[in-house]
Image (cartoon, rainbow, N blue to C red; front, side):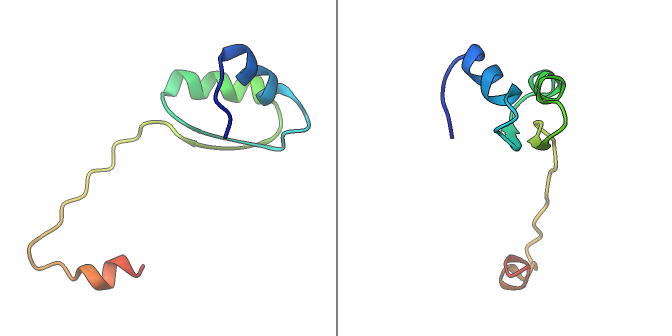
Length: 66
C-alpha cells in the first residue's frame, strides 16, 4: 500500500514493473486509473451499492461459513 499524491500514483500505475493495480473509490478515479494503467490486471471496487437485509430467522453461522 502506498500513500501519496496524484503524481506518485500515476507513476506507479503507469510503470510496467507494477503488474496489478487494486483500487477502492469513486468511478471517475477508477476510470482514470484504467486509462493510465494500460494492459495490466485491475481490481476495483467503485463504490457499488449492494444492500443486504438480514432477517430475524437467518442462520448466521451457516452463511458466515460461505
